[in-house]
Image (cartoon, rainbow, N blue to C red; front, side, top):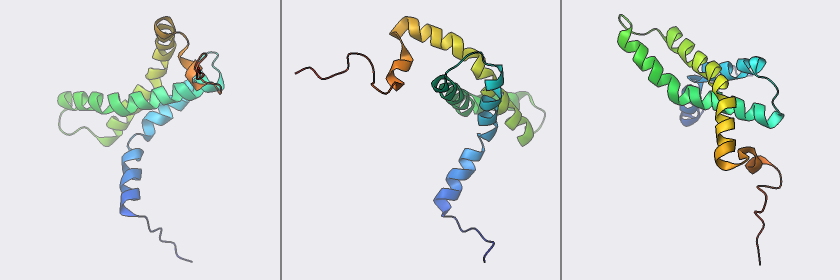
Length: 123
């Protein structure tokens, strides 16, 4: 048996990039403990919003913190910032869904098995 795991360099690079956002994903999952009543679909959407927020806003906020940090921003602090972005993005989700419902009806209807109402083909 070989203890060496041989990965394709492309797969290894993709995993390394994804690992940078693991704190944001963890923050999104932890934040589910603080969210009120959500359906399973809502929880999946909530984690997606938290992870996406961490992936796009986390590096920017870490770069801003790096400007004020004396010297180089430690990787632990960068991970903490990304974690808190994923955690706090969940607080925005109820307001975001409320706004989306007012603007576009029910945004979660696109995820229902039958699709949005009235989307059948008319002959």
